[in-house]
Length: 107
Image (cartoon, rainbow, N blue to C red; front, side, top):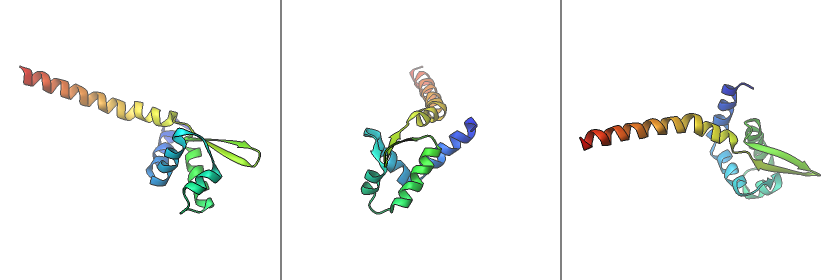
């Protein structure tokens, strides 16, 4: 997968509020799919699995199977890459503008 399609997959995965909630659940510790289904009791197992598949395709979730259990681990590296590429560059630009404004006001 090209870098651009990987970024698109991450943005697509992060676009849905339920998938962001799933990632929030995995932030502190890995969880089984069954535990996630219990957390999101208003969704059926199939829907939770569909959301996990989108997250897995975007490399935001890494799945390990242990016997009959499927453990889901958060992989935050794609989010960091987006932050470095998009947020970091724009934030640096905003800081430069504020610094220039402060300098102009001080003069």
